Image (cartoon, rainbow, N blue to C red; front, side):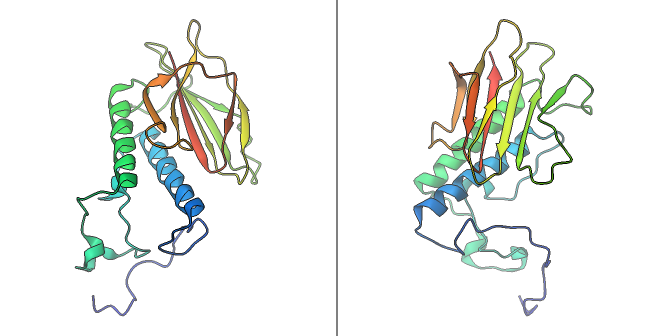
Amino acid sequence: NGEGNRDGTNDNFSWNCGAEGHTGDKGVLALRARQQRNCLLALMLSQGTPMMVMGDECMMTHHGNNNWYGHDVEWTQLVWELSSEAEGLQRFTSELIKLRRSHPALGREAFLKPGDITWHEDNWANDESRFLAFTLHDRVGGADLYAAFNSHTFQVEVALPPPPPGKRWCRVVDTNLPTPRDFTPGGNKGVEPRYAVTAFSAILLMAK
């Protein structure tokens, strides 16, 4: 675009998951797929208006270029013929959006108040921790949401908090599971009191 590679920002907080650019390494590809789902889950659980870049929902890549808007080349154009992997991510994203639009604990119109959220193992002074877990409380129907994000290189086994009276935890999301098991719209019943969260993965449980 005539800028001689001087455009864009140098502050890039990214990780190639073990290989630079295109790769056929199944382990790297699986990790990248988990990370895509982890980020989408974090976005859709966040308060405020979620914002996505075109193609995030179908594995579109700009090959590391953070200022691709000025380039009229093939890799800046949305690909409509999706691979099976991209279709799986598109389905995952669609289900997340449906959940966000339908669940009373998500998409709030006001800031969280005491009693709206409970943080678990919230040792904020531990700068070596790469694990985050919280419960978003549904004060109307008791359909609480428990979310856990594990960015460690190892599996973390969590002791789940008690669900609301008369309910039990059902697995909605586990980004470590292959599509379509990564998102179960109705919730997979029978979650044990302890749950193993795989390295670089996230889970979402719903009280039902």
